[in-house]
Length: 299
Image 1 (tube, rainbow, N blue to C red):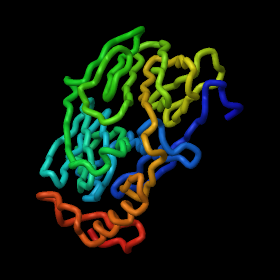
Image 2: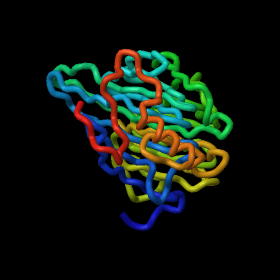
Image 3: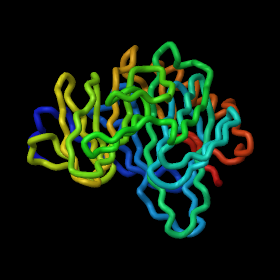
Image 4: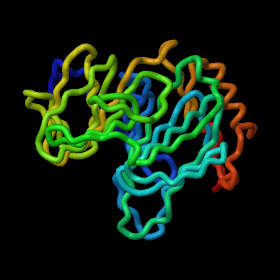
């Protein structure tokens, strides 16, 4: 990869991470760029073709002071949490879980038939200081509830926030945007003008207008602020756009599944999980994932 285009701050290539029954592509956090707007974490799950009966489970684990945002392109995942929520998420829908002062959840796949596919993205959105210790909550938004339109041959679905003249019904606590873009034909789109923004190629090829270098799937482009950025997309290209305003109070501390503006609060969360003080998940309270620095337990 040569010299960066003048509109680019960084190009991020994901790293493989084992999360239990599957390997994901982790994009954020990245050493040179910890977040994009309020988004602190970005994992792409798959695309993977499953064998008959295969599971891709993430066993019960805790979170504090963040919101998880799950969006699928293919497959099904069953979400359960300590509030008693049980929700099957299907392609095109958004699951938004706000951890606040603390929540436990699991994500388990539906037993696969041979040839089933699983593909999706999970984000973590940091919470403003005033909401870090809020009551936890969970909301599900079916695909049909999310606004979309076709513009210049591209299908634009606004998953959260506001962009392209559309506003998502997803309730957020900060200024952000998250958009699924599918190019039905070769086209150009302008990246929404926010303080921080990025594009991630899910499929196909994108390039910055008039630039020679093309970026294929599995690459995140982080754009410089204050510039008008136009992306050229080949037919069949799919990408997500995301970003927003940085969180108040500065960068967040992260350890495992915990996020906070306070290192002491993360230490407390570690003790709480170690001593089983987080609330259990009704109907899924036997297995759990231990802290990374503790011996793995059988499951």
